[in-house]
Image (tube, rainbow, N blue to C red):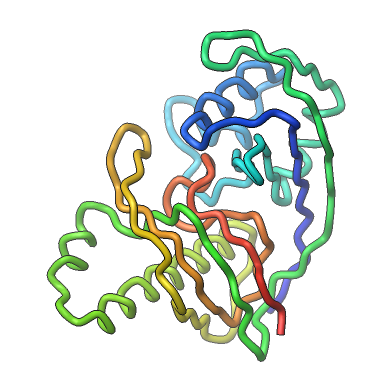
Length: 224
């Protein structure tokens, strides 16, 4: 099964450090003319437990927002009454709009694998970190991570209403960097990796934990 997704990418002229994405997210949410769950994933006192369809990121060093399907429509509404002045880090700031790009992207199982790079991926929580740490073989560690990555792709697909009839395959081809990341005040291991999959995915979306604030952002580097 395949599906065409509408994706809107909003790029600002402002350079922001990666650690400021939660502040950037809060600044955008605070200046909404009307409340929209797509921007914050909260329903009343609870959470919207589904793949985030509006994601705040740093792309090429600059603040950016990506909207997927309903998130894309929400961004269009937001920018129909756009005000550049926000409060960021306690200071009034003008967000200079650089570009707004809307595109239709096909997500599907493909015959030949597609290569991706992913930065700031958080695959491990407290429980599976213990399991991962106990694995001695490097091959088995990679296989463990590949299974998690496959699950992340399936979670994304479910979040956009897509269910694959064929098996999703992921192979991690390189581990570039392992580093410590903080998400909601909790420390996690972050990974920068290259991988291949038989799923054609949109560049710029996130996979794994914390995708609404820029973690696990992928970039397609090859379409065979």
